[in-house]
Length: 387
Image 1 (tube, rainbow, N blue to C red):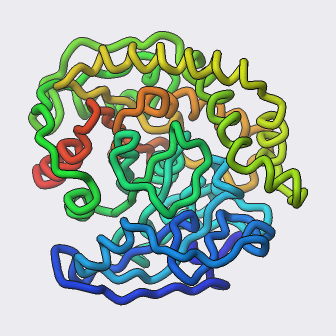
Image 2 (image 1 turned 90 degrees about the horizontal axis):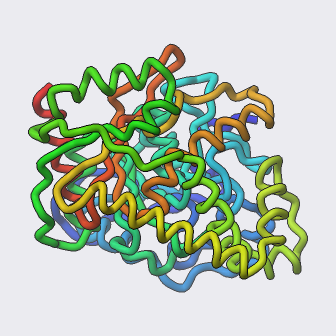
Image 3 (image 1 turned 180 degrees about the horizontal axis):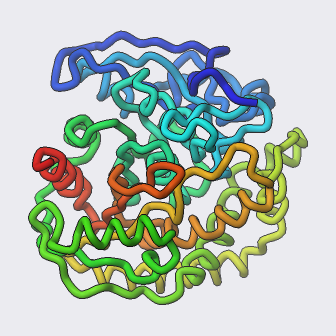
């Protein structure tokens, strides 16, 4: 089942600007994890929506955007309790991918990416735990930012795994991405970015076409950054194996009581992931967290204060809508091996729509030092202006 667009048509939300500012005249949407006072935050599941009351407060990010002149025009679909990277919701359907009409949009911020790619809004807010902004940005051929962990105000939003959750956004152009960043990111004097390094294991895992294009595109540096020696973080499956149980344990701590009480029906993949999450012991979670901490240190040492890691955002473009559950899971595994690098290290990652394969777009990602979020966005602006 495919939706006409990514908006929640059964829960229309519209808020006029409350002020004037740099976003005058722009329209935006928010993923159905952001609280809007007086409406229910449904997190992609009809039973969750039925068993929860309307929010009492609005996300401060939304308030900030409204005060800067933007208009909120709707909430957008997400995967069930945000626990997926595909964008296919067993209850509500699949938002379209305007860039690859027969492909999935990517999740779990599927609706937000879809409405931006379709030109229905100028930008949209999403959330990213394991790749839920970066993957749909890559698949839909738009910009998407996963901020430094803990940098963006996450009050009055739903969570999946607090140690990894971030709130990010999408746009079709770098200038809009940067304008939103100037409002939502704290003002900080981050060190200047000077160098860029290819992440060798990610290039090896990605498809041949995107990897070759990335090397050609950045072989002489990127937007003023000097190409430095290729970087290695070791086998990427180590990042996945550390991230997966740590995330799952936290997801069960957050949703477990509600699942046990209400016995909701989940679609393929989500059902199995929550079942596995329920079985993770505190000892196993602590072991995974320790592994994440070690990997975090390794990546941060490679990045230092001035260097950017460069890699394809996803291994390939969007897989077909009719792909088997097995194929979806296989692609999810490869993708999480790549997205878990920034996820475990807590670093900002910006996906730019600069690569492609035979089926469609693939993002080029920049992973920067902690707090370099706005600097990454300004790099994208500089690149875009040079083309």
